[in-house]
Amino acid sequence: MAHTWPLVLRDGELVLRPLRRRDRFAFEALRQRNRHWLRPWDATDPEHPAQRPSFSALRRWNEQQARVGVGLPLVMVVEGKIVGQITAGPLQYGAVRTAVLGYWIDRAAAGRGLVPRAAALVIDHLFTEMGMHRIEVTVRPENTASLRVVEKLGLRAEGLRPRAIHVDGAWRDHLVFAITAEELDTDDAGHGMMARLTGPTDDPMESVADTPTA
Image (cartoon, rainbow, N blue to C red; front, side):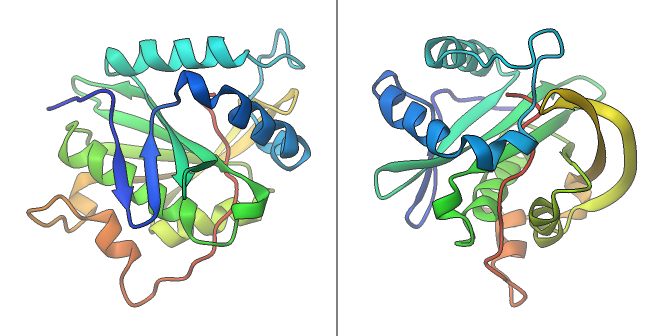
C-alpha cells in the first residue's frame, strides 16, 4: 500500500487535486450557485440539519483525513476552474479494505462525462496505489441521474439500505453499488476502471451523486 498526499490525478483536461486556501471564494461561490441543485443529495448532520461546515473547517478536516490516509478528498478542476468535488472515505484497512465514494458537480458542467472520469481515476488509484479491495457508492433511489453514473461505471447493485444516511434533513433510503478489485481487468499501468469507461460503450452522461462523507 502506498499513500501520497497531496495527490494530483489527471485525465486530459480534467484535474483532481486537494482543496487549497486560495480556492475559498471560488468554492463558496460554486456551492452557492448550486445550492438548490445539490440540496436534495447533500448529506446533513441530524443534530444540525441546516448547518454546513465553513470553508476553513471543511479544508482542515479534509487535510487531517487525507494525511493519515482515511480520506481522499479532491476537487475537480477543468481549465483552471473548480467544477465539483469527489471524495473517497472513510477508507478502512485490515481485513476490510473498503472505501466509500461520493461526488458532486456544478450543474453547468453536468453532461460532459466529468464525474465518471473522475470516479474512474479515483477508483484506479484506490485499487492500485492504496490497496483497497472494495469500493462502494450509495445513491438515493430518486437520483436517476446518479444512477446513470454507477451504471456507466459498471458497479454491481447490492440492494437497498433503508434510512441509511441523513440527507437533506432526514434519514433517507439508499441503494448500494460496489466493485471489488477482482472485478476489474487492470493493466500494468494501473488502468482498470478508466479502461472500462473509455471502451466502445462509452456514453458521456453523468450528474450529481450523494456525498456521504461531506
